[in-house]
Length: 83
Image 1 (cartoon, one colour):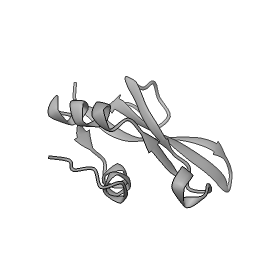
Image 2 (cartoon, one colour):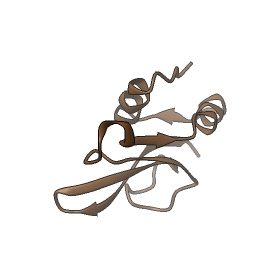
Image 3 (cartoon, rainbow, N blue to C red):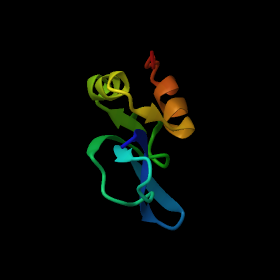
Image 4 (cartoon, helix red, strand yellow):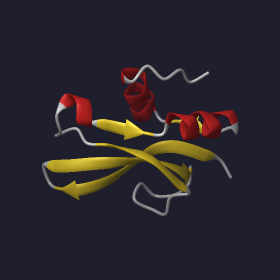
């Protein structure tokens, strides 16, 4: 099983919000998550848009989870190193 850190979509049409989750890479976008790490709410004010647990993200990356391109750019906004 390959774990992947990616977004899971919630909300309504034109009012989306996303949870940053760890999922099996074969699971559908809105399928069951292994663990929830935080959320991304693009409609909110700048300081409230991104909330996540950086330690859990680093732990999952060290354990071999890959990061999607979108989540990588979100983490870069918060200056989280992925190495």
